[in-house]
Length: 252
Image 1 (cartoon, rainbow, N blue to C red):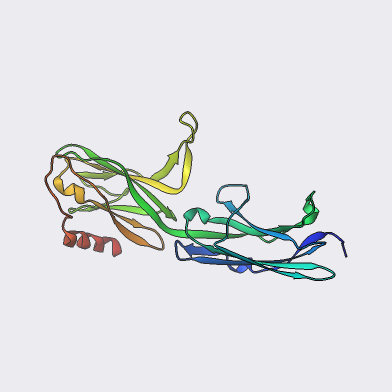
Image 2: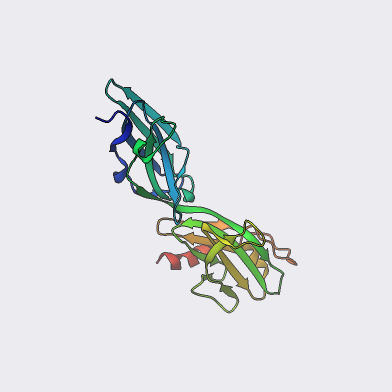
């Protein structure tokens, strides 16, 4: 038997791959390693979607059991991960190495890779808007969700999305949110976040009550937007009965 090294003994990770609901899902991961001449150091690593690098991450809860013997040492590592962020989606694995100051691949062992996807609606927020009574207006919102959502704009008169429109309301195509780390550098996509823009011809006082419905494969939410029409003295929230009637069209 070798006098130095680290070996994977068992794991439960192949059976836990799949989709986990945002803020509700809990991933329970376990790996067991044996090693010589000392107990292995176990870590858990994550590779985000569309990236190539593995990075360590903090488990929500982590505990280890060390079993020291005369011929070998065993470490059982358990990592509990609460699905609190869409960016937790990606590949996971456990890995272990010994305390050799010059760690080579011969001193490392790896668990199998498995994929999880955190699904749900994370946030909806107004990025910018211009609403002046009797003028052309627009509202831009950012929606962060996984998988890619459908966004419906709800007014007192109709429901519109990027596939539909009216004489007064038009929705631009849903597209990825982008950001620049450097003002002169290239723009990069913000994972799981999208922009939706509504154009309004001849803005009316009731337009400050416009809401959005965000729908994915697994969830649906209505979000109220904090809007104000310039030049209007109207306060209120529109007709809830009109909105409910229009929503029936989506549910059919």
